[in-house]
Every structure is written in structure tokens, then in C-alpha cells.
Length: 244
Image (cartoon, rainbow, N blue to C red; front, side, top):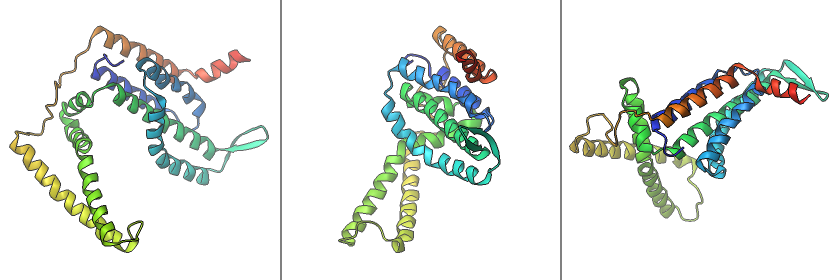
């Protein structure tokens, strides 16, 4: 997995996410077999699951808010199981949470097995994606700078307000406003420094040409065939029928 080209892994990850999103919200059971993709790739690449689960937890609250709102709005019964009535909102909630988990897992595995410079070069190569790719690259590289500015402001606030454990709500507006102004000023200085070093809007961290080896074509072919089978055939129903 680690020796495969970045382009093949990026294409397979995008293809996987598109297939996961394409499922209707009324069929979370058909999504279940897609768990095998991240499970197999984590096993092949030796990626530990605990760090991925910790990062997945950061994305779940957003999906949780959407899923709970669907549970409140879609109250029509879908089916009953063991005497309990399952509403359409519950089914939609399960589908949203599963789609979010699978998509985030695919991205995290891609990042864990591929150097970020290779991904950034591929994202900034096509003109339609260049602006988005540059935003991702600069955010990734300079998020620490923003956190450093926020940390300095936090330390200054704590020194001026002894005995206070957190920023008062009455001071939150001024704090965020100052952080925004400091961030804009820092961004301008970073941009001028990049221009002085010859930056022309194209990321040149590494080669932007996508190279495919025989292993890359084999990886893409096996993944495409397997994922298309899982998408167009309800493997869960087939396994359930065989189990009976």
C-alpha cells in the first residue's frame, strides 16, 4: 500500500466515496459490506485503528446533528423489528452516520499511506482544482501558525485576568476579532514571502505528473471491480439468504 502511486490511491478513494454517497438513505444495510474496504486496507498497510477512530470522532458530531434532525422530521414508520417500530428517520440516521464514517475512514487511510506532498501536487495540477488544492495545502501547512497566534493571545489574556479559567463571553467578540486581524496580517506576510521566493500559484513540492505502474493498475482494477459489485448487488441480502 505504501509503495503504490499517489494517483491510483487518490482515484480509488474518490471512487469509493462517490459510491458510498450514491446509496439512498433508505438502504443502510446495503452499505454495511463497504466496511471491508477500510478494514482490508488498514490490514495491508499496517495502519493502527485507534488513531483513525480518534480522528473520526471529530467528524461525527456534524453528521450526528443532521441525523438527529432527520429523526425528528421523518417520523413515518418504515418497518417493525422485535416489536419496535423503526421510523424512516431512524433508518436515515443510520445511513448518514455510516456514510460519514466510511468516507472519513477512506480519506484517513489515504493520508496515512500517502505523503501529503504527493496528494497536494495532484490536487493542484488540474486548473479547475488548483484553487481548492492550494487552499488545502496552505491550510495544512499554516494551521500551526494560526494555533500559535491563538495560543499567544490566550496566554496574554490569562496573564491579564488572574483567577479566570476561560475567556469571558463578554470578551469573546474582541478576542475573535483580534485573532482575525492578526491572522490576516500574518497571511499577508506569508504571501509576500512566498512571492519573493518565486511562488506563481502552482505547487511545486514534487512532480505533478501521475505515474501508474503495473501494481497501480492491478490495485485500481481489483478495487473498482469489488466496489462496483458491492454497489450494484445487495451483498447483505445475499449473505442473509445463504445464512438461512
